[in-house]
Image 1 (cartoon, rainbow over the protein chains, first blue to last red):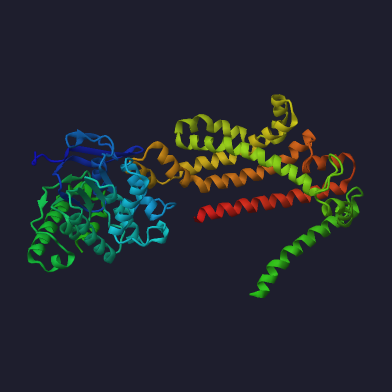
Image 2: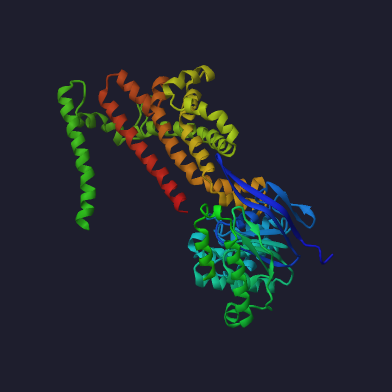
Length: 284
Length: 255
């Protein structure tokens, strides 16, 4: 039972139609995620990794292939799953508390109104927003907004967490802080949360993931062989910076990703002029 | 700073003064057109005793305006009650939009003068016919703006509804309505403006007491000064209504 993967993705393909032209995004993508595992899908911007995550979460439909969670085919976003978007996606007419509470009320209608409120408040306190719960999103900084979004995800006590570039819109310092906080939330949650995160930041993947799945840039994108992260926990940005094993591993992941970009067929290069630049950015 | 403020105060006054001068000049050429001064003298009783009631049509200007405002309020409310749900339906269903959009575009430019006889046929009485005309003329901006508001809801919000697995009802009350609210109020402001335009026409044709009925009656009684009084009053009330709705609208946009 322990060895059966929780999420199984097999042979996904997706092509976007835009008028007469069509753009293949994914082809023959397969992946499995174990229960309680943290998997990072790492690739350059525009490589189709967000599309893959959207399909895994049931937000998008694949053209071919299937996604199963606990052996059941994903039709819609699964119960007990939460999703964090890159652009926060908070509702501006609600306060931070109301935004979190909306999720809690939808996920746990069995709880009383007071319990829903308490749970939402606690979730916001956990991300350090205890004194900002009555503020609206436009009164919060980007980092605080993303904290609200993370609190909203954790408040529903999900078994599965989908993170779509959750720190992509933040400045470098805030990004680092939030990465650390997220790692802390996982170790404090006291139960396994299976997580799939999409990012273009290799450091972030090494800090958080159990396994790193490189995206071989297309189009259409395919996945490379997953790389297990051979580093103990807890990991922090500071310790990883000075750890020799971490440096070796970082170099290994970088080389794999660079090889992945190099493996692109020549005729596709013209279609994707930004790709190389984005990967360079990811290597910083 | 103070000089600039003074200028802002003085310039509109100069504008009004010039308009009065033009009116006065015209009145020297057209014998039937009373001069501003004569208009004021003949209107004085109506303005100074705005709530007086001397007869069915012979009432203070405030009382007449009040009748009209109540009628406009009812017609506008009826239009909003019909127009808002219709706007949501058309915004949420591309199929319904395709079905009804051409019809709306044809109905929209029809004058209140054309709707009123139809209302009289339908309801036999002047009061409901007037409400019908106001509602049916004024509802279109509400319909179209609400529809546009729903269609302008960013994909992000739909995604939130999806990932939080919100029910249809919750999605409607917590996401669709708040996201559309500023658009709805733009619609309401424009609708109220049209409702106020329609009131004069509908009171004229039905002869009901109110600012428009008064205007038409005084024309028939050859008291031309009172026509001008009614015109100025209609304009000022319309201006105030628009400003009030504008205030609500700005509050919603910044909220």
